[in-house]
Length: 423
Image (tube, rainbow, N blue to C red):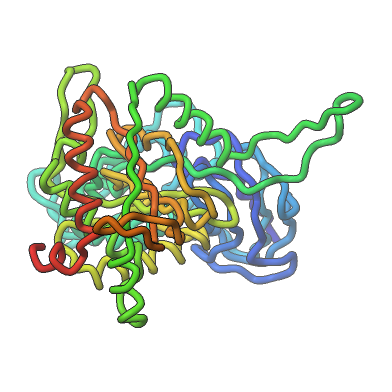
């Protein structure tokens, strides 16, 4: 019997450690190559880690809820025959050295030079003078999982690894996500550490919180932001929603009106290139939706929102919300946002001066829709009122543009039927 130990891999997000959320196998279980063995918390979501080995689980090296450094033992697998696994692991190490930019599995890489092995071409395979006719070479289970979860056809991916191996970087290029990145999610609360002294407690930051700290600090340090807000009479929108309880939700309508306003003010669906002093506008609107789940805040994006109906937006928002709360949103969805919509009214608050989701240039938020006294046609009455707040990067526009954008959204909320007819 031979025992092989798999260490915690670098999952490509620059983390030095990760938390084992839960084990999907137990000691004594038989596992196959590529079988998911554990759920691990990264800086953006909870991901499943697959095993590169087949055999019987001998040792789980960490308890659920504990934190491991990248490269520390994760699981040991005992196998009677390991010849095929050894060959796969050797090829896997070749992929790690092939320039993917991240060590995908921490088997341990060497700085020693790798000698090229010359093999006779197989039948049906062209030599270096012509294109290869063989199937794509992907030996990393993490790379295969990444491609599968994001719908990437590996036969269309151009390999850059040694020997024609497809690396993680190759798959990420094929995903062709916009340059914008998602806001770093906030973590769930962790048990506080033992008190360092009388009257104080210390709580170590998780991967979520460390990433959030870096992203939020960067946003506040780099973006000269300004905030404007307005109270909006949402009574007509509320009544429209109540008249069709099986139709789109309120957030779907808000998303539709936001997308329409972004088409009119495209400078807000953009990023600011500080190095070149340029405003970079996007052709596509990938609408980020802030979702507060049990493990923290994430912002998955409805990709291609500009082409969707209100009903379709509602379907996608419901799907993304469920996936994000379960930690199952894809890497593309979490990194594709070009503008963020935040419904903080769900948290029971009326207003917020939010932090912009760097490198985006604006964020729109809505507070609670509540009964308030309002004057309509000179008469005092009770209406459904929501406060809309808008935070924007003052480098890309001035207050006139921001106010114009807000009024487009506010007018659509106050007269939803006529606004939808024009869309």
